[in-house]
Amino acid sequence: MQLVKAGKIVEDSYVRVLDEAPLPEGAPVLLTAARFLADAHEIVERDAPVGVLWPNDRRVAELAPWLDRLSLIALVFPKFRDGRAYSQARLLRERYGFRGELRATGDVLRDQFQFLLRAGFDAFEVKKPADAGVFAQAAARFSVFYQPSADGRVPALRQRLQPRAPVARVERSETREQSIG
Image (cartoon, rainbow, N blue to C red):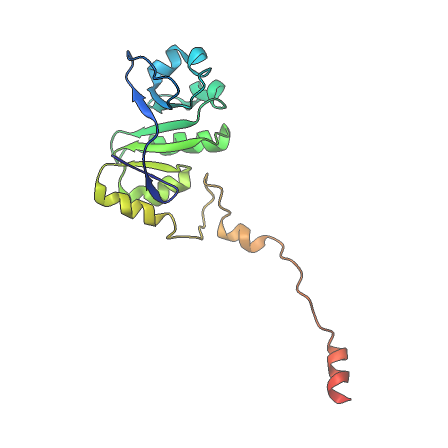
């Protein structure tokens, strides 16, 4: 799988560690939810970044005590029709204030890309190599949105209603006197 982040295809620096395998020293790791929760106190004390692969049938509230120590949460889309990870992403960004990398993994399709961005995802594991380029380009395709979302962009209506800086005006009487005189 290819990883798309910040509009570019990048190498994944995280090592996926199986439940029974030892953690590599000094390397960023991506652990299953079961492995992470079983040893969370020790794992978050590592000197390397820690990520968790979180299934969409678990409550993200279980991660709340650890969010300031996690650098990555990968939310799983087991089927493209199963959108629970969208809700998890919004909760993590909006309710719990998670600011680390939020990665979409599993059955992620190019048709869902803008919705994933709007839900707060900022990295995507893409199965099809041909889709990776499309994902990378799609981030810049739209600049104005109408709906509020977890990606931090201000919706179009709020942009229009924000006060603008005053425009410098030229006094008409001064201009008229100068043109007459």
